[in-house]
Every structure is written in C-alpha cells, then in structure tokens.
Image (cartoon, rainbow, N blue to C red):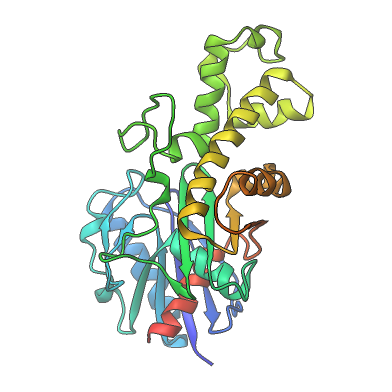
Length: 304
C-alpha cells in the first residue's frame, strides 16, 4: 500500500498528514501557521518532510497558485503567499518523489475519487471561500490545459456591475460569488438602497458589514440581509449556468465555507431552468476540509 505525505499550503496555515492510495488517513493531521517569508516557508517544509520522509513513498503538495504542467513548481502564486514562492524548487525538498498540484484541482480529484462525484466522469468542483476556485473532471481526467493553469473559473468574466476583482480586472466571477463578493454586495446595497435604513445593521457603516453579519441577518429575517444574499445567489447562479453550458457536467460539487449557506436544490433548479444542455445535479462536497490533501495524495500515487 502506497503512502504519501500530503501537505496543503494556504496563505494562513499549513496542514499535513500521511494518506494512503485509497485516500485514508494514516496519521493525525498536523497544523502550523504559514510563514510570511520564503526562507522560513522552505525551512518549515523541510522540517515537516524530514519528520515523515522515511515512512512514505511520495510527497504531495496541494497549494494555492497556478502549478506548471509537469507538477513540479508553482508558476504564479497568489497575493497571500510569500514573495518568491513561484521560484521554490519543490523537488529539492525531499529525496522522495515530489508532486505539486493546485489546491482546487486536488480537491476536485478527491471529490471524484472518494467524495460526492464518485462514478461521475464529468463533474466540476467549485470552491466558494474568500475567493472562488474550480476543478474540472472531463471524461475521467483532470482538466489542466496546455500549461497546467486550466480551470481558473474565478477569473471568468460575468455580466456585472463594474466591480474590481482582487486581480485588478473588472467583473470576475470571484468578485461576485466569493465571500469577499458577498461583503462587497452588502456594502453596495447599504450605500444605495433605502432597505438598509430599516436593517438590524443600520447603526453600522457600509464597510463595517461582514459576511457573518449577512448570514446572521438571514436567521433574524432581516430584509436587507435577505436582499444581499439573494443578489449573491443570483450572481453565483449566472456563473454556474455559463460553466454548465460549456462543459455539460453530470454534477457541480460545491465546497468551501460559503457552500454550507446555500440550498443546493434551489440552485440546481435555477441552473436547469436556463441551460441548453442536459440537466445537472448540484451537490455539497463530501471529501471535507482535507480534500486538497486527499486529492494531491491520490494524484501522486497515480503519477508515480
């Protein structure tokens, strides 16, 4: 049975565990904060790997950022990663084979192999968190594109309201459908709609409203919160309609922190009422918070 040390690299924390070729955990999950400079990050990687290296066959990274086609390095990293991350030589971190994959792609593979999309050879996993990530399984294979950067669904343009994304472009899907997008919608409605004056949050300024406020407001039947959330759902649905029409998937798997707040059947019905391809199912992810590690480990086992 092959064993993999899987490491999930995020902007704020690193998590790691030993996982076998069935996606089963063979160790406790270790956690540490992500260092803010590249030398400390590299040192932390080596410390984790040295501790477990003799117990495993491979090292697998699930990471933020675009990964090259050979799964050996990060080509372009996200703003929350240390400067120089895209120059890190992952292969030199271990004497064992090292595999690197984008975290959204890895999560999609986990859902396909051991999660909500088992047996569905055409499916899409959309991660709704601070940003929006996407992983595409097409005919049973992970869609990576010519350079490895395929599936950057968060950068898809949708018909929008001139909103600037974190990438500095206008009207990206991520700028509307993410947690940050929900907050921006809340700010815009607070500034332009009289409904805010009757809200339970009327004593706050527009930029003080958080995503947590909106979710809490829904439970209090606050009309302002409901309007904000409904607009956010509409923006999300527009993007999912576009994706469904292009890829004709069997299912869309929703993962990430924002996913727990949506009614998947409601979104599914809205999508299927407008698409021109065959109906799609919308499901919540099942692989859990460690899907990135699981997917990276499974992909490493297949490659090596």
